[in-house]
Length: 202
Image 1 (cartoon, rainbow, N blue to C red):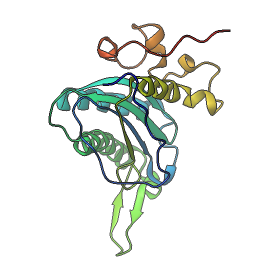
Image 2 (image 1 turned 90 degrees about the vertical axis):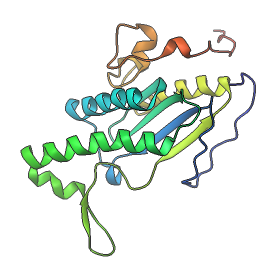
Image 3 (image 1 turned 180 degrees about the vertical axis):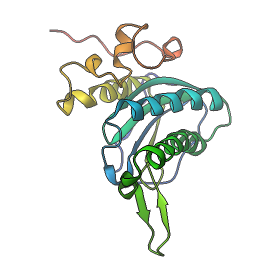
Image 4 (image 1 turned 120 degrees about the vertical axis):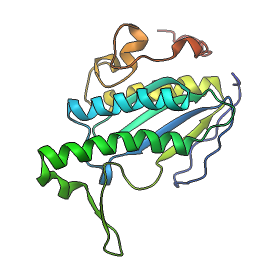
């Protein structure tokens, strides 16, 4: 991973093309079905954290940052294997959450199924927790941009007015950066190179 290469601004158009390049980090973003706020309850956030931990164990990647927002998530990972598939990682992560959510709703809140039901143009119906498609995936080869992405991810709740400081948001990795005994999920910060950016001068 380079410490100086620049990264082009993301295209506003969605693309299904993914580049599984060894050594690159990946910034992943995906939303709940119809951008509904499915991730406001502690139980659903815990489902996602559990799924993220299990997917890391299964697919082998370093987890450098994440945030769970009410209707979408951001995750920053670096796959450890020479051959990997971001599509497979995403599918594994999202499926774990979807199965738990559907099982819970069917057993405990069946009327909520209407909000999760996707009616296809051909009339076929299915239950969804996540929006159709693969979401957004950006390769990061610049160490500087990796750290900018970490700041961006941790700043999401602050920009939305959900907290006064990034580490105040429980469902984020921000507090782990301040105290490695805190936060809902262990990160792999030992593999994250130091921030190459000069410190801010007040």
